[in-house]
Length: 117
Image 1 (tube, one colour):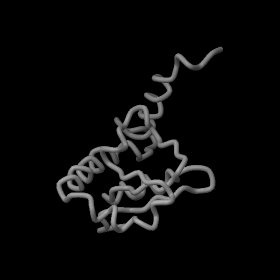
Image 2 (spheres, rainbow, N blue to C red):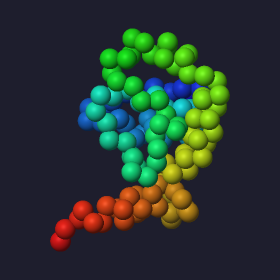
Image 3 (tube, rainbow, N blue to C red):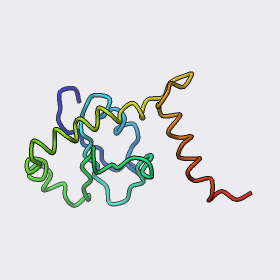
């Protein structure tokens, strides 16, 4: 992953793997999410289109063409956004400001109206 512009994150047995996403961003890669069905972490907080490429599984045959068609300026912006959001995918003990723990708490807080007792 180190030195790569894009890192492919295919769907696992159930969903897009969180480990692949966090590792690719830790190395500064723009994640390429290949899945027909996905529930991305923090999708109600983060705009994944700003720092990842999301493709259908059938697009695998066009993958190289699709990635090469992304203008360098757009890639650079996505890469800068990866560098900004990757801190949200690191878990620390004890929690650090703006790490994954805090985003989980924010996501739970935002969904509090759905939870019924």
